[in-house]
Length: 197
Image (cartoon, rainbow, N blue to C red):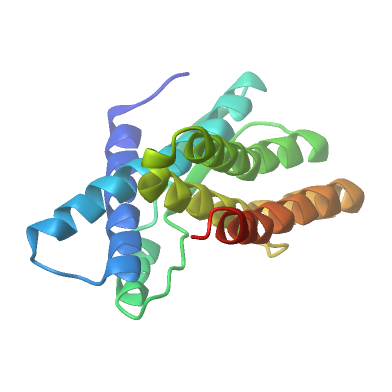
């Protein structure tokens, strides 16, 4: 994949701010050194999902012969920080801008790959949590965050990935939406009932 210095700076900025927002939403803002640990965990759990999500869009767009680069949305990042102080996350940190000819199918594939990557990353975190219980304090939040990101991005509204999939093929959209719902809510129920968490 091809990157520019501008794109890398935008990715790093969005990665840090969205991780900080998740940290504040879940743990509350604090100057306590323990809050730094929360941020580090968020940079890993949220960051892996965010970076892979955006790079998935970029990779597929470039594979289809298009120019594609991520750009952070400073207003939405600021909004995410503000909402985080109220315990709520609205994660729309920016997106991959694409130039080039694409069919509806290819556009839908590019949009779908992001949420699918989040669901896959969530499954990996969940599997690690099962195989190595000592990692659960990090991996279970990582699993839930990535499942939520996948589901959130599949919402069928114009600013979300799900919208382009929905207008292309409603059947395929429904399959992935149901999968995201089952993983998001089913995984939480599984870990609570099976492991007593």
